[in-house]
Amino acid sequence: MAEQDPPRIHAPKSLHGAGWLNRPETRAVFGALSGDGAETRAVGGAVRDALLGLEVTDVDFATTRCRRKLWRGRAAPVSRRSPPALRHGTVTVVADGTAFEVTTLRRDVETFGRHATVAFTQDWAEDAQRRDFTLNALYAEADGTLYDPLHGYEDLAAGRVRFIGDARARIEEDYLRILRFFRFNAYYGRGPLDEGGLAACVRARAGLAQLSAERIWAELKRILIAPRAEAGIAALFDYGLLSDVLGGAPRLGRLARMIAIEAAQGREASAPLRLAALCVFVAEDAPRLAARFKLSNADQALLALGASETFDRALPEEGATKRLLYRLGAVAYAAKLVLAWSASGAAADDADWARALTLPERWQAPSFPLRGSDIMALGIEGPAIGETLRGLETDWIDGGFAEEREALLAKAKILAG
Image (cartoon, rainbow, N blue to C red; front, side, top):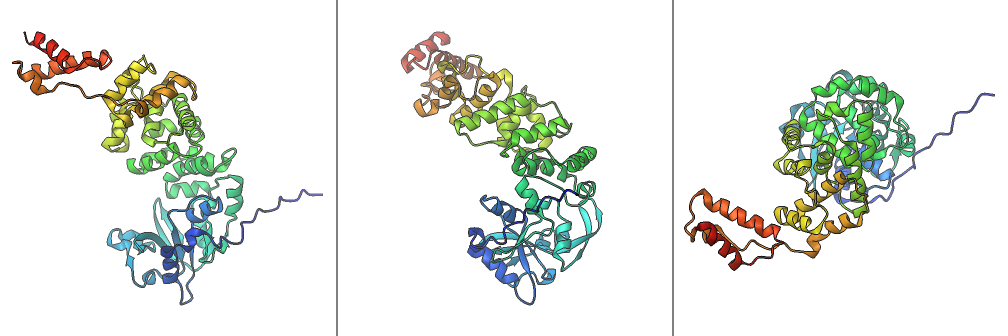
């Protein structure tokens, strides 16, 4: 007797009563796009996350309404900023100050990478076929009724990220889907990666070179802060893609320790800081990565904290932590300390490092008692003013911030001769 196929795991029939569906702005979009025989449904991430019990923030819509009749009032067509988007049936509509992306149902006729020729359709199954992963091809009507044409809920419930149709073809439409495959696994995956999807990603890895720095960083930073970031990054490394993305060798152990420390100490994940733990070894690595991914100055400053040669070997001894807090301020101090902790190999619950992390709550760094004008008043001029001030400040810091103004002025007078 032939073995029976396992029963399908059907999605719940409805998300009726979901808070995000009842928001005034969401109701306004549904209302404006309804009527005249048109159907409109929320699609993708909002439906997926709602089924997982996660918070829903952004909501995208798909509609059978003709692209030229997408909105009867408060609309901001994407055509004003991006004509190709309107040709593909997409507009941005604004309701109660919230922007929503609305797309007319479509199917791909011919694809040239991201530049596909599309035909508009009234068939929801055809629209679903052109999406990337089955767990993103989920739809919800205004009353919460679900539509799951590709059985995406089965994959979602199983923690399985699976390309729709031929994985190779989906990737060739947009090589960013290689990174999206690993990102969605880092957020929603459980168990081994889908073999077919993984094989297609590895074969197409050269296509990553065609992507812009901004698009790569947008995906990489999401992977870095994902619930299963360590597994996501490790998978990219194991299958040879991570070095292509980073342009250098990573340090997986330091990243793993940072993730463990953040979890143990209740710290929020930071993508730039985790990137620093992963692949900033020396000071030169920070500007290299900043240029590669076109990072902001603020992100580059965080990366620079990861340079191992700048770690104080005395950490987490309190004298060293006070010196560090004085130099960096509370925010950068905490980032630097976590990086140094991650590099040290100490356990995530190490009591000395944990106490050091709370130093800003227990100690406020004093202000250096002298100013440049004090040095100038002693007859010191030019560059020697700064040199004298820096030397006195260093002595003051090394002395535990104990010397008072008069004692420092006495030293300055000696230096002035």
